[in-house]
Image (tube, rainbow, N blue to C red; front, side, top):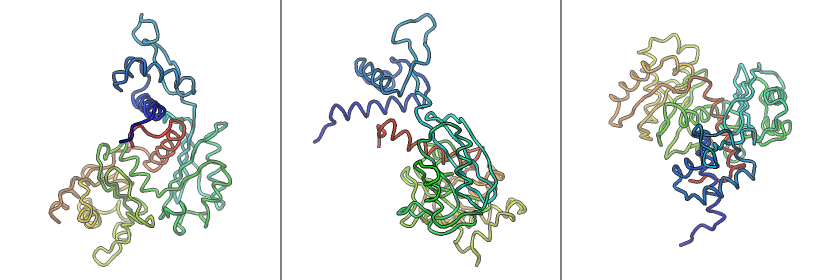
Length: 343
């Protein structure tokens, strides 16, 4: 049996403490000891090391009249790294820049242009200003090939060409990752929405495009070619699901009829994957809310023996953009803070 080396143990403890500071805000040394179970000398060394590396700083004091090292509050150095999330839609480009704590420090919205790489690069530059970026994550419609990281084919975003990802990387000179828009929405839902705390779920995207994202055992599943969740091609009553649930038609459908079509579309994923939870997201999923979710759940319960809960999205703002920022933050934190304490 192999045991952790002292340097490995230090790295694990450092990341554990940093994650606690991210989740709970500034903490005192005694609070870090209580939450981690680490000894007083270990926490003292840890705090000194993280301060020396420019990762944490004293942000204030706790306890009113208390003085001394134990009363100091320690927090993450927010400007240690910055990231950008980008949501590329058919009618707009949204950019959010955040510091390493996740606090938004800049944002812009632009209309699409023929030279899409130039548009995205200038939008990111406008949102970030003088800040250097550690990572940029872009969400866009289409299948992303896991082997190349680029779209497996073209989408219908104005200005998208072959090797758009390569052009973006050249223009921005920073690590750039492309991800399917629905997958990013699922990441946001998993971490901060209706699927928080769930290890298995399917997100059903009801918007100007129809798609799904699959999370099993807490991990996003992309499939061998990046096509996991391309549910829009599923035949339903002799038509493709993306035609049955066409973006402009959905808002005009009676809610019972919309629920019937959604249930027929998502049933295949429920029957095959048994995810236990389906989250309805996108514009129509958000508009339908819990009423639509309840109607879909009721219909699914009568279609097969697999039990499933259906919930409306728990993300009130742009879930694709939120998922892009979260993914970029994970990249930056793993790079700056070291590997997660628990993998």
